[in-house]
View 1: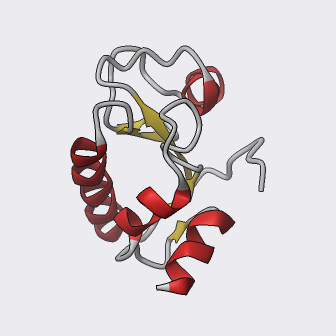
View 2: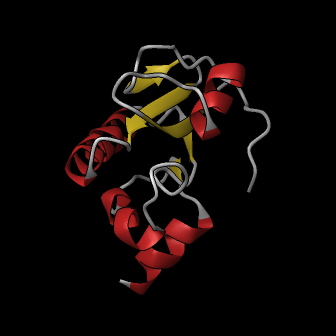
Length: 120
């Protein structure tokens, strides 16, 4: 699913880097289209939510878990998750999909992540 536009209650979830330099990939798309803030690596930014996927798997996992908690606390929002970490960061869905295991129903995961989680 390619995300081109958002409804008012939808949030685009993308991979960022520690400095919040949204120069390429989904991060650039979030910056150009959905209000990502240059210099902010993590959290809600306009109609987007950043997760640092470039500072190692431990940081990525910690921030993904915080995102799951945020989504749980905000059932009024619908979070559309990109293949976070599987582009420029270079991870595979097998490596990172498990970080989203406990995501609530208002989190829409990419098909590749769902396939990995369904196998477990």
